[in-house]
Image (cartoon, rainbow, N blue to C red; front, side):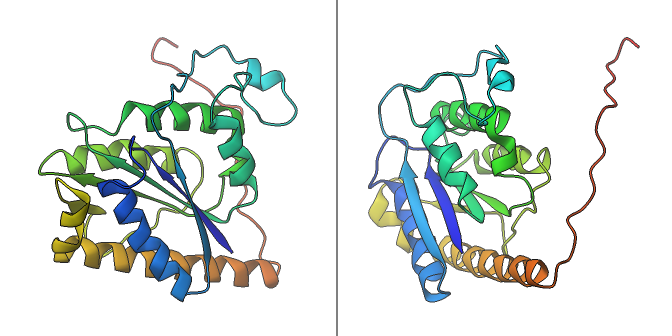
Length: 209
């Protein structure tokens, strides 16, 4: 079993990366593999709603000059996900939203029915609003949302301060344990041939008809 984690911050050794490292260590003890993708500082395209990905048979975005298609490919081989971001203006980073918009629009099947969790880091405020944005990717795509003992946030202005947020680190620990438990439960369901939930499609309405 493998959990794919995305660091939506620009730094691969900042607060958000440190939070994901905490989770990865707990998953390791649960004998669950993990991989962290750092989005870094390179430009990332936003989704332009062209719908050209709908014509692709491989569930890939037509823009292939950044990490999005790499993430979709890795998602196909992963069993669970954690999307993490620093808080900017009470919101996740723009780069993680650009990545997730395109990854879910082009490659939604790679994520469906697999558990996911969001984690945010901040110096002080805006965490609840940022979590709300990230959690919506799970709830629109038939993904079980992994919870913890508190909202999945940890505080610090610098990476070394993350470990001093005792409740935040405790929350990350419980989140990792819950993710491991859910992955094992899903694996048990697969082994017993429990059928996947049936989903209905086709009905689309708007507010003028």
